[in-house]
Image 1 (spheres, rainbow, N blue to C red):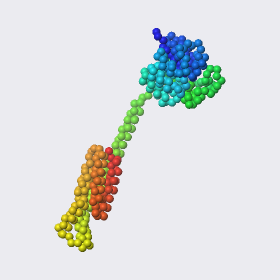
Image 2: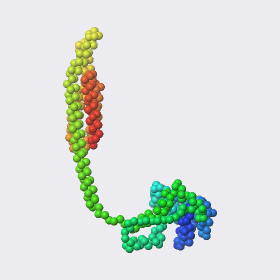
Image 3: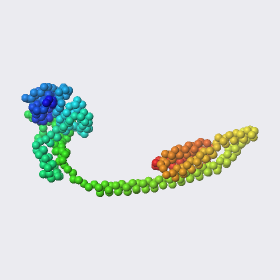
Image 4: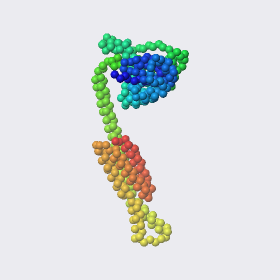
Length: 373
């Protein structure tokens, strides 16, 4: 059977490498192909006696080798996301340092890359599951020899990690918040969290959710009924307001229409008065023609008729049993167009004032219609 080639990328987690590298080199199904670290001399010293084919400071020189099937990523956490994504893209299976990323976005990026590539990925916190103690406890749980766990407590005593075997330094990348997420608390608590995530370790008691679901559906039905009633009441109030404003519009139109003969008479009288002041003698037929043309130009009877028609259409629309918001909005545009024309044609102060009142009423209706579907 051909052995799987293993490459170690980084020895920042040197304590893990000291146990895994010999296992890879001497395994029945694996062989040690490459070791990449920023200092190859220190790497050879740490893993002395192991015969890797490549010792390099460039992890890509190891990663790009076609005879590497598995990479063990042991650089500091801040470098891990990029390395794992590259490894996955090259089709390498991955054993990863833990925590695997500085934040959730980085972890999600690794998961996405691994899934897209279809490679295996294991983070080192899960290695505790294969320890004899953990497997024995899991077996007892599965057999029912231990009752349902209600609480899990882990106590761990240890000093600050050292950057390299034999070093007296206490300051290293392990204590640099820019390179590790959460420090020792996450670095060690993650083992306990992973054990609890092991299927079958934590079992939630079955709950009868039927009464809760029934109560929730009952409340939903009550809420929808109250909402429907409220909407109907609001719609009725809006319809009453629109009907009242429409009635006022109709009244104004009637008042303006009633004044038309008087307005026309005053136009006629004003023109004759100007001719008298000028001392000019006008041909009676020609004068009547000019007066007729002027009155026709200023005539608003057509606009008044259209406004009345819109009032009737508004009443029919409000009585319809369907969504009418868009149609009402269009009607308000038509109302406004006729009111503007009435105002521009007006040669009478009172008619102009009535046109302004119409615009106010139309705007009030338009604002309310924004609440109508």
